Image 1 (spheres, rainbow, N blue to C red):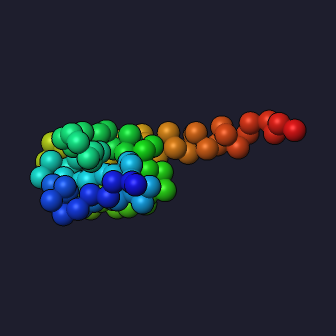
Image 2 (spheres, helix red, strand yellow; image 1 turned 30 degrees about the horizontal axis):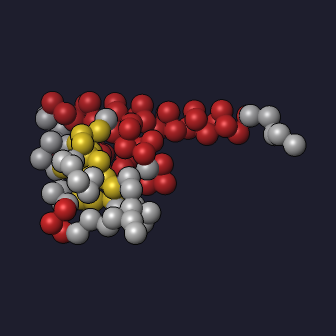
Image 3 (tube, rainbow, N blue to C red; image 1 turned 180 degrees about the horizontal axis):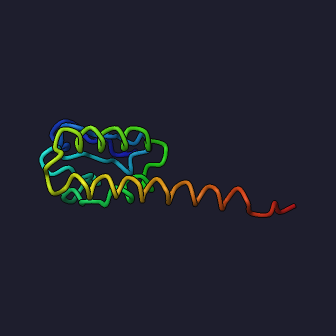
Length: 107
């Protein structure tokens, strides 16, 4: 059965829970960073681009959380890095799917 974290398993106020029981994400409002949430180990900090690649179906939410945080913390040293990470992650996903769409069809 897939692991679904409960309230005690989520140390962050914002979480993206994966229904398949893997690839759970949390966003830490204290440091402006995404974390991968695991069942049996501590949350793992992620580059925002990694969060997007881990959860491309939630790219809209990842961008919203990131941009909202950067707007609320414009002078924080993490703010510019977070924006750069979002841009790099979005580009990586777009490039991946663009290359996949150009691949020859195998019959």
